[in-house]
Amino acid sequence: MGLQNTNPTTTVAWRKLQNHFSQMQNNSIKEMFENDASRANNFHIKWNDFLVDYSKNNINQETIDLLLELAQEVNLKEAIAKYFQGDLINQTENRAVLHTALRSSKDKTILVDGKNVIPEIFEVKNKIELFSNEVISGERKGYTGKPFTDVVNIGIGGSDLGPAMVVEALQYYSNHLKVHFVSNVDGDHINEIIKKLNPETTLFVIVSKTFTTQETLTNSETIRTWFLSRKFGTAKQEDVAKHFVAVSTNIQKVTDFGIDSNNIFPMWDWVGGRFSLWSAVGLTISLAVGFENFDDLLKGANQMDEHFSETKFDQNIPVVLALLSIWYNNFFGAESEALIPYTQYLQKLAPYLQQGIMESNGKSIDRDGKMVNYQTGTIIWGEPGTNSQHAFFQLIHQGTKLIPTDFIGYVKPLYGNKDHHDKLMSNFFAQTEALLNGKSEEQVMEEFEKQGISGEKAKFLKPFKVFTGNKPTNTILVDKLTPKSLGSLIALYEHKIFVQGVIWNIFSYDQWGVELGKQLANSILEDINTSEIKKHDSSTTFLLKHFLAK
Ligand code: G6Q
Image (cartoon, rainbow, N blue to C red; front, side):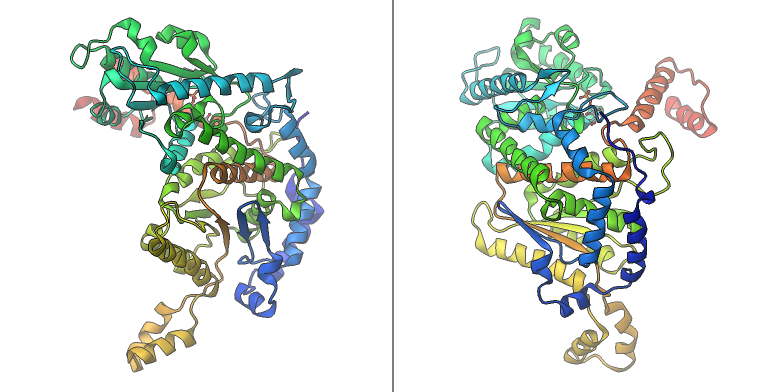
């Protein structure tokens, strides 16, 4: 039922890739372009409204062929089938990984423990639709009979990052509801949000798969106390039911909190937190942009699912991008990848994918329970362009580290401001060109001549002005930022995570590393509450003493 276990470094393809790497490592991408006029034509994929150009990479056809051979040797095709059909591929938690089922069509059958889960998925979707419509239209009202004006999503990690990213990304499609996100247990965070709210017109969506998460429960309790406080309104205990809804698998705990059983939106243990925005965890998205747009987001993801599961690998966007990432991570020794969307709407995409990518593939034990002897999860980071150009691009251009970068841009802007958009996109194209070509000594000297710089000054300045170039990039150019294209884009990266996890022979869908910190925090909280410092290392004891003395 699980995935095939293969240490990738023992495959024939891996050995061939190592030899191939020694021939490629000092290659000039620029020269490969000069020697082959059809390079961009050979290394791009067109799919729906996406154009993915991966020609500006240090690869040739042999690289791609060997990477595809690697995918074949680890049996990627079979792994994809297992992923989509609900096999228990999350073996350490004994669960299926079925976020793809959440966006699949009604006529599909997907079995979990012998039961088709599609009907219940659609039941919950209907509930989301009805509820969103009632809140948006004003038909559903608060305890004083006023329609809702504000929605607060209370959740953290997978129960916050996805909805927060999508609500921000799709704000062009939003309605009158003002949407807020409370995640951190930092009391200052919640206070900053509460002060903008009126209890009579605010709806609270508590999102917690387990309903045991310290941050979310603490924030929910603080908000409930505020809601019931005479200082701010006249709400009574029974009004909690009108203003609080929950998304969870833990029905008992939600009911204990005081939430009406009609206002519980169920989810399932086969949906991992960081892949859950497609489930009722996306309720806040549906409230913010309307159910139709939420459904379009799902449709876009479903289209990418079909592309990923049905397209042969050399034309398969998630597969090709995953393999290129392996090429840099495991052969060139690149430690991180940057993700630069040229739209302010996607400013939360990198933080969102940081969880998706680093929590999933930040593992060092393989599927046989052994320590890996090769690199796994990449570090992911990024910010929108052009802002990032004025911030950290210096390091990508002229630093000592190799940072493969994905550029994501849109052909059409949403408001049609052509002047701005042309300027934005000329930067988008210019950066990948600059990273590829760099600036040669001759070009620098030519510039100096034009600027009247010569002699000692020119000699001194020259090395600083030269750019080596040869920095790999992928360009993902999409027609327009719509709910559908956003759904496809997110699903693209989800599947890239999957492919890399399969090749690295690790379990991508657990997160045991997150648990240790949670346990220790609970034990230290006890120390703080009792002012009795238990046995810790001397640094922690020293710090706790300082904290408690104030
Ligand atoms: C994601 C993780 C994690 C989780 C949060 C919130 O994959 O599992 O980020 O989403 O810890 O958990 P709850 O939804 O259970 O509150």
